[in-house]
Image 1 (cartoon, rainbow over the protein chains, first blue to last red):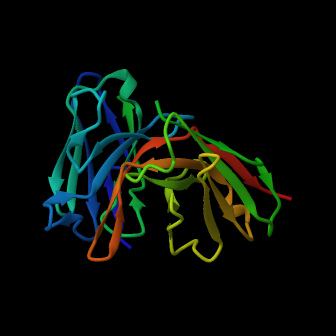
Image 2 (cartoon, rainbow over the protein chains, first blue to last red):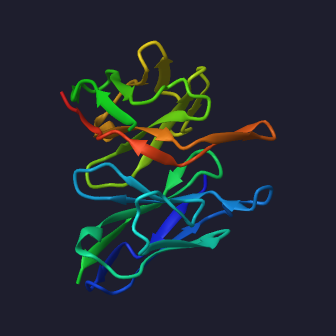
Length: 113
Length: 128
């Protein structure tokens, strides 16, 4: 199985500041045949299901604010929120879909400092 | 707008079988482009993929649960279902159904994509 490890587990950030969440996979999730990284990011607020933010590591879903961006390739990925808003408080998960079984990171809890 | 809704008992006894159904509305479960999955989340913990089905009946299971899981589809009702047998307290979780945003077959291997639509989830507690 591909193990997804996120860091940090908890991230306090001041409003308006940049938030950076890291995700590392135990094997590359880049498919050479299409040069795509099979990685997604989700946001989960309390009592709600996860919401897809990014797929292919950096493709933002429709309706997701452009302060959210994804980057990285191979085994190392980053989700960045350029200017933290109060509504961004949530737990964020990365997920690989390169190889079965589909696996998720353990989650990063983003909070207001 | 596509919507998914889980339904089923909220309490299951140990050693019995957990059964849930996901009803899809606002779109057809028989679309060639999509796969349909189950994910669970124990209280206060992370996400675990359980398994996935294609409308034609092909199934893909997490090896960690494969011996206990059965996923089926009823295209006439636009529903798919989950059965998890021999449950223990460790199976207490919020169970989500979700749609995969697509999938491909490459070198005879099926790769199923990210989850783009989710149900609200249903808490299933295993307790006597």
